[in-house]
Structure formats: C-alpha cells, structure tokens
View (cartoon, rainbow, N blue to C red):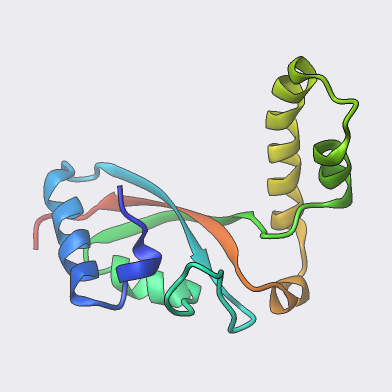
Length: 135
C-alpha cells in the first residue's frame, strides 16, 4: 500500500509504478483512490498539489486507464453532517446508514459542477487501470 500523492513526482513514484506493473499479470487490474486538486490547493498532509493529468501522465507509461471518477470531497453534505453530529443516532443505525451516506456523498461529488472543485482544497478520485504488456 502506498499513497502516490506523496511520491508521484519523485523517482520513487516511477519505481513504485514500475513494480506494481511488474507484479500484475498482463491486463491485470489495479484500483486506487488518490487526491487531486482543481483549486491549486491540497490537503494538509499532501506534500504538493497534484492534478488529474499528473496521474494520467505517470500511469500511462505502464497502464491503460479504464475508468476515473470523483469519489469524495473533503466537505460532507449538510445531510451527512447532521447524521454524524446527532447524539440520537444508535450504533446499529450508524452501521446501517453509513454505507448509504457514503454512496450519497459519492453521488453528490460526481454530480457537482467544476466550479465546486475550484473552491475546495482537493478531492479524491478512483482510478481503475489495467497493466499493459511488459515494457
């Protein structure tokens, strides 16, 4: 497990991608969630600002990108915040509703206009890629 956000533009990033490619069978699938920015800002823990094209450019040397979509914003919706902050929510309700809220948040992020992402520091997106033939 590695967070490419920290190493993508460093030599270690290319080494990691090469190694992941090496251990995957041809057409083997790799699914990851990473951070990107439209606003030019980043999460507090990230070392630099990365955009989608940084990932596309780095991965395209080893992988065919099959799908990409936004999955999470650093800001939860009002509905989710009210649920999380409610002292009346039982543990069993929390267990049952959390996956539904996660799906709802993903749906909202996918539906959000590009202007939303210009205001937020970053978002997380899912990339599904398949290994190309050995280089």
